[in-house]
Length: 389
Image (cartoon, rainbow, N blue to C red; front, side, top):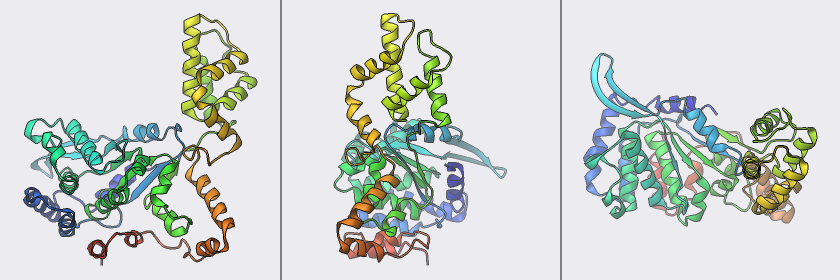
């Protein structure tokens, strides 16, 4: 994941010290107190359009427990997310820049909750106090339209380089998830801020709601980069090293490395999912400490799995036989789409014909792909006006 390159590309046309940058900040500051509705948010964004096609939407997806969030956070930790500027080209300036902001999508997928999470994170990063706070008692009384406008204002004010939204699959719980996605797309295409979505394999339903999978719908998943985290194969070098590290840190006397029998057994009980491996080893260590065990064997591992990991038995069994229907967040999107495509292709000639009629994946995705899904002709004309000439 080249997150650094995505941030840099998003900044190419968004210098806060350029003439257009000053116009942007002044425009949103002047209109901040007018209480605009959603349609007027679009009008303001038209006025401050400064982005180009380098700002992208990216997606990091994969089965639950495969370390998606950990991977992204480790990469982002190498990039300072707060830069307090004091001088620029010999001139004194006071400007706090946020290179990236990461938030979790609320459990219920609420639109207002997503905005409030964003403001609370800004206050935390900027150490805002009193009247400077974005998130305050009045935030709950603001309309959703006002919160969305405030979010666009904050992005432009602090020249945010990347917004990371984790647990994106929570939007599936929201009946108006399409409006949230349209607003975030507007931020990408108009304000010019790239967005990285992180979620389980369920997120494909947000991008590909059609009953028939096509190139048109699949390519909407990510216009920036698309990366999949998957469970490990049994003979994967990294997986074996991870098992060895856990094994060597058990609180008992063991050989330096587990035997092949132990390797096979651990993989059988975890199916290459790091989160399940961590849970199994933690429960083993707890039992060893509580009972003062000095050595362990295969029977001990089987007993811990049988008694301590009961809620995971069905999921592990599904992974072992390749069942993608029981748990649709245990498999990568590519596997789910292949299975769904095969089902649709074989279900009826009409569906297969519809898939074949889609145009080939030969041109870069753009915002026009989403215009056909807007609710009204008015919203369609509004967003069409945002497209570059």
